[in-house]
Amino acid sequence: MPPFDYTPPPYSGPSTEEILRKRQQYLSPAICHFYKKPLNLVDGKMQYLFDEKGRRYLDAFGGIATVCCGHCHPEVVDAIVNQTKRLQHSTVLYLNHAIADFAEALASKLPGDLKVVFFTNSGTEANELAMLLARLYTGYHDIISLRNSYHGNAAGTMGATAQSNYKFNVMQTGVHHALNPDQYRGIFGSDGPKYAKDVEDLITYGTCGCVAGFIAEAIQGVGGILELAPGYLPAVYSTIRKAGGLCIADEVQSGFARIGSHFWGFEGHGVVPDIVTMAKGIGNGIPIGAVVTTPEIANVLTRRNYFNTFGGNPMCTAGGLAVLRVIEKEKLQQNAFTVGSYLKERLTSLKGKHEIIGDVRGRGLMLGVELVQDRELKTPAKVETAHLMDEMKELGVLIGKGGFFGNVFRITPPLCFKKEDADYLVDVMDFVMSKM
Ligand code: PLP
Image (cartoon, protein in one colour):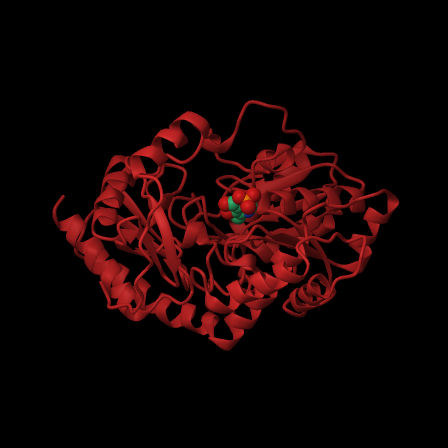
């Protein structure tokens, strides 16, 4: 593991067994089954996490693509602490500079008329609001999302989410799922406009001919780091707008400099959405999300009362403002591009050595490695993926997994990830794969 100059303070809390017992007894059984034996995490510093024994782990999952500046980045921590000491809570009923400043800073990162910000507490809430805005503004109800997408787990967003393992059998109306422009498994390969035709068909055969909107991630995160085929988004945006709908970019994972080449995922596709949703990276781990849209669209909410008690809490907005400052000051987008390109190159060369690697994809520090039992048939190597992840954890490397079949390594570390970290990650992956 690369050297790192930080020793966490000694831990004197309850034992791991005690915490595990409480988790089993008092926490919802629905929480993650990623690891057979979950880690007891006590400290975090930049791209590293520490367990109760002070053992260091390279966090190549970044708290599910959430920690962008690095764990407990001092400038972000200071901003949150200082704000908390002065005013811990306020709502949009009053004025507060932390809220207004962050809204202004966010709007400045977006193109065109995308200038009005609503704060939420999560990505789910942000997407719920985006879908509501689209429905109110257009007067239509139908929303189109992509198969294999993940947009959240409340009533509306669970409808937009299109992976059966994240869906429960409750009423989810008015959402249609279009063919996924998946360049690895999709029937049209990388031909984006061909997949886009399916959206036209869905509108023709499944709706009154008009829709409220279309929601998509530029790179599907939970879906297994799948970058939409080139040419897809411009074609679909045009179809949706002809059908009276709004285009929503879900930037919960792909936003905030993670993809390196651009600040937002949609920018890589040459489109400008009507509504942009964000969460995760926006707060470096503190609970905040946002919806940004145009003044005209935002105006529909004035017809009724609409507010969110905790959305835009000054502790979170002060933290968010610091996140934007750090991304800029430490050139984290550039780092995501440089280190991400290097890491992708190294992972791609690993594919030459290990048959189990079917595909390496993604951009910047949002990378995926799809594992298959047979390259020709693309049979998902689900059990092997879980096993290799466990083995990597034992050697101090934490990554995520996802994809419809649970056979894709998700690599989304903090954007301060270094070349030496990339080398360590690939060397460990190589080692565990060689032992199989
Ligand atoms: N949208 C995308 C693309 C996501 O990846 C997620 C969560 O993983 C969400 C929305 C929902 O965000 P949250 O878990 O903060 O509600």
